[in-house]
Image (cartoon, rainbow, N blue to C red; front, side):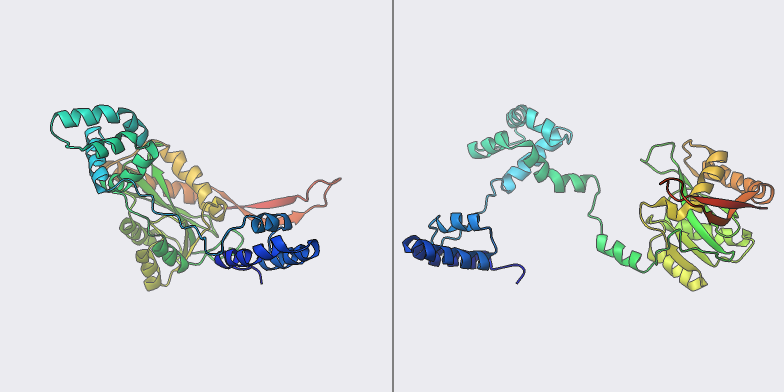
Length: 341
């Protein structure tokens, strides 16, 4: 068997063999050790130490509960934390005596000696552990629903950069570009970008915020502008794309919905290139916020799409040739690029 015997069975076995081991001869001890090593699958030296401990078979230690800080400590600690402007546990631990004395003198806390000693001796790590539920509730945080997210992801097939081969026009890679100026906090304007894998045709639309219903509205507004019917979209793993709303939207319109692998941008190499060469080139990296900024950005996208798609040539990989290596150098692939007008 692979895992061996359980801990309780091992204790009982050692207790039964220890007396025979101590009273036996050298040859008998060797046989007993051989059987013990075979049954417990432990090292021979470790088996000798176990059998010489003379541990009784029924002495199975059970770790008692170590809860020290009850609900009274939690309530008092929450009051002190609020009075200290919700600072972290390390800072709160330093100023704890001053806050306890001040709150008691003003009648905000009534502590007995045992409760006061617990508050004055609690560690910074324990303070953070006790205050975690209160801190999450105060900040509006909640546990991520990992199972539901994985369930939605399981409905969307994964497509890597090697799975495209030669798709017909109509299969678009889709991504969002955030115009946040380098700050991830707060709401900002986003650009929804679509790039056709076959031709490189690129469309952009401005969104006032990052929201899944706005993605559906943007896709609906972009389709009349596309030169070919929308046959499929390939997105990243952002929550604005990985949701039931977009899945139902694609199913109702016969659009094939795929996604890339997480943290591998090369799976969306075509649109990642357009994000920099088109969106960042014309818009820049400044922070855009509000309805007015989204309207101006939308007008800019409507003007630049004509220039990018009709007057700018784009390269498309036509062929690769493998060359023989030189003196141990790795094999190189020489790409042959064709200009697509």
